[in-house]
Amino acid sequence: MVDFDFKKIQSYTFFGVLIGITLLFFWMVRPYVYPVFWAAVLAALFYPLYQRLLHAVKRSSVAAGLTEIIILLILFIPLAGIVSLIVQQAFVVYQTFGNKETFVSLNEYVQATLSHPLIARYTGDIDLTEQLSNFGATASKLLYGWLSAWGQNTARWVIQFFIMLYTLYFFLKDGPNFLKKMMHLLPLGDVYEERL
Image 1 (cartoon, rainbow, N blue to C red):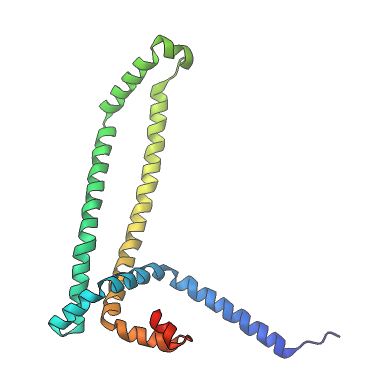
Image 2 (cartoon, helix red, strand yellow):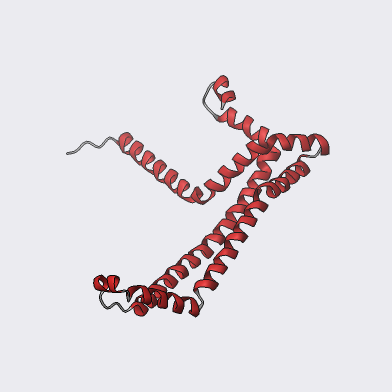
């Protein structure tokens, strides 16, 4: 007869459930890690500005809101300008290469080059029109897949952006209180907690 140690089974079960719940928790908060991280980075960078605004307006909620507006103006308006330039260039490229005359002139140029006696000796008889149309079909499928993935990622990015702004507001407003509570919860000595 095998002797089962009930305490041992109880310990293994407890740690198994604890590890499972911990992994499930990390899987649930995974989408929020990046917005919270960037909110913490921006709060650390712009905290001196927040303190100056707090000294001027005397209300923490107003100072945190003004700091967020300034962060948006400094960081995200230039980013929006860059994105708009990229979109404009993409439309120019699409209009240039989406035009049938461009492909006709490209086909004529390549056919003239391929018909040169030195090149024709090595290339043989190539149907370039069919290869260009196959290339265009493949490129359009790739572009469609990229644009649909980009559209889905844009919705996710917008949601994470608002989570970051919401978290940033409270990191600015209640930052010192968060740090004091974290220092109280950490099992390190006070000297090491101050350094962190």
